[in-house]
Length: 220
Image (cartoon, rainbow, N blue to C red; front, side, top):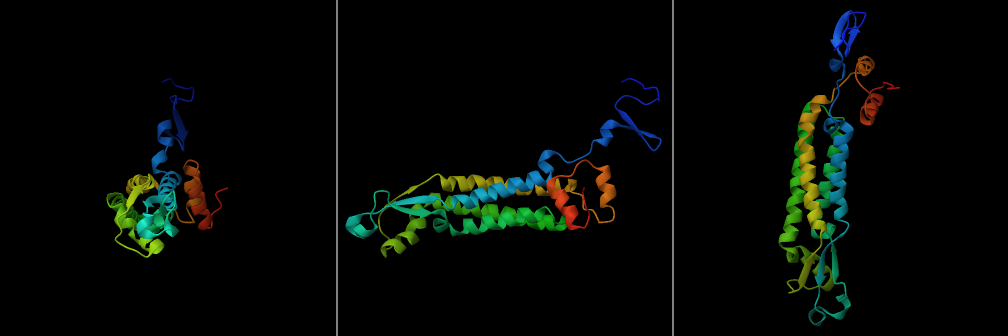
């Protein structure tokens, strides 16, 4: 490390008469802890779980001799995830709303939101695993609606979408657990010191800019 003519060392900056290492100037949250990154992960996993429920989870192969030709088809009776596991749809929407709310919440509120998202993710995983463990029970409601008969002995095949919901639910819970440690990098500013803090810090991400706009400060 060399010495410049003004007496400062390479890799150092001089501010207000005090010499500070350049490394001390480089502050900011790691990528995983940035609001934009974490909210995107949570939103993507919640949407993946929600999207899986719009697809076929179960295919029921009906016996026309028992249930009638009207409900028999070559592809069988298709049961969407929203019907096989109704709670997954609602819990995914709750998790999505929680992830968005966490980006503007205070410290205590973030703990509450984290708990809500973790519980929602656990519910998603539990519901999807239940469908995979007993697909016939999950399909009984759709069978009864289509045929008017319950308790029929039929074959039910499971698609890959319940497994996708399980994976999305697990990743959703893990993403929610990152809110607490990541929150240490999320500084809450008032409208009076936002300008000074923004000048001292690195470039704000998109969510930080929206937060500042909502507080009456123009980040530009």
